[in-house]
Amino acid sequence: MALAREVALPGGTRIFEEGEKADRFWIIRSGTVALDVHMPGRGRVVVETIGAGSLLGWSWLCPPRQWHLAAETRDPVRAWEFDAAAVHDLCAEDTALGLSLVTVVAETIGDRLRATRTRLLDLYGPPGSQGSGPVP
Amino acid sequence: MTLTPLSYRVVDRRDETHDTVTLVLEPAANAVKPFAPGQFAMLYAFGVGEIPVSVSRIADGHRLTHTVRAVGAVSRALCGLRTGGWVGVRGPFGTAWDSAAAHGNDLLVIAGGIGLAPLRPLVDAVLAEPHAFGRLNVLAGSRTPADLLYQDEFPAWEKPFAAVTVDRPANGWTGRVGVVTTLLREARFTPSDTVAFVCGPEVMMRATARALIHQGVRPDLIRVSLERNMRCATGHCGHCQLGPLLLCRDGPVVGYDQAEPLLAVREL
Image (cartoon, rainbow over all chains, first blue to last red; front, top):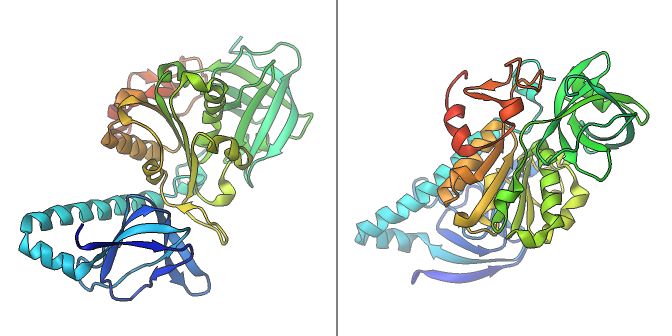
């Protein structure tokens, strides 16, 4: 935590944009952040919201180290902000810490991948829209 | 009695969403027995067919409240009924949300889509005797904001805790986006002392139950509501069989400890 600094972001703050260099990450302490992607003709489309206790940003971990989504605060957010390069250096020195950190980040990535796959099923749509045959 | 539909008249009708309607029914003469939260009726659209529909509110007297989503011929016919129309009713059928098992415990009521309808009577029951339970959390996931049921009732549920998330946000939606399990982070409960009631699409219930177990909720304290092809609703025809269970009789509400191994069997 010595590498972290506490930040307070007002609602509506653009934290990072798609394609920018991913050089930081955050642990959200309170508030909500929306992850969005720009779609021509539709503007910004929110694909997920994350809240307290969540990791914001993992693109810093592996190349090309660019944000593949954008992030904006939905309401006032308090978070711990980490400098990615400093964390990389620390993990290189302490491989056990590095493994623990990568495991935590991988868990977050896995959670979001599973959630995305589940949403691809269009769970709440009418059964007929999923090709499940005759419905009452 | 349960094999013969009784005539009920539609005395109130409310459009919940673009494809979902709540009907309030009143018996023409004889009434079916009282329902418990989670139980269902077989609703007969005259000349079209019969489908199982959970009770979505339990009121005093003999009135029945059902929320129906138009997805097929029978449900479309039911949704098309106007005040004064007639419905055949058999019931009550099936197992209930056993709220007594949750006395003294925190409660998670987790709904996906129209799964909120069968859970609403449970929420009503808990709110009617709040001191009997720990903390109540109502978590709902919906396809879009426009598909969310009972939006005007959420303010009353927010006093305990209620949260909504959608898969596909519309323009102007400022709420949460993502799967319903993400709301568990904000819910107020002690996993070891929590009973969860989950209703929605089967994949959603499996994902939710796994998330709950991962957080420390006991599988036997997770209740899910399973749907299969229910025809007779009396446990005789066998259409709704799931392994050793006839879901019209032994379900739809079952413990996840019992359901989980059955749901993992393909083509069962």
